[in-house]
Image (cartoon, rainbow, N blue to C red; front, side, top):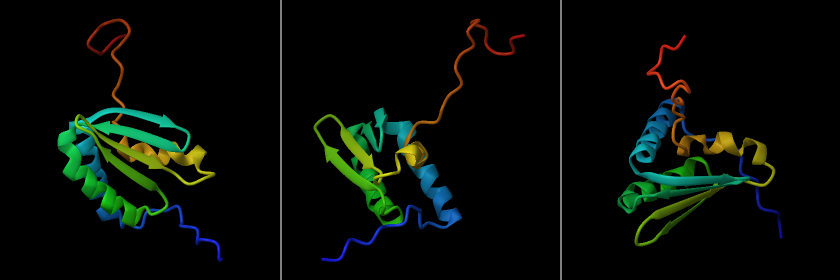
Length: 119
């Protein structure tokens, strides 16, 4: 039996479509992400249950443009769990691959307690 053809580790969206897609995913993340855990090649994201329709649509679209990633979506009564797994040998790049699904880093509050402009 012939070996399965390797899928290229690259998104097939053009830059304009990618920008729109990333903005949409960020919006869903900001509105609905409850928790996340990244371990090795796997990212587990937990969302509010009311994000189910958007998550199903995201998964369907991402499976087309990023076929090298494995997407598993599970619904429970209280949450939606999306698990994304990157291919073998991509662990060093997994953080970059998963970044679009993670919340944006927010600056930490200054240790001195001021409202900014320290110094």
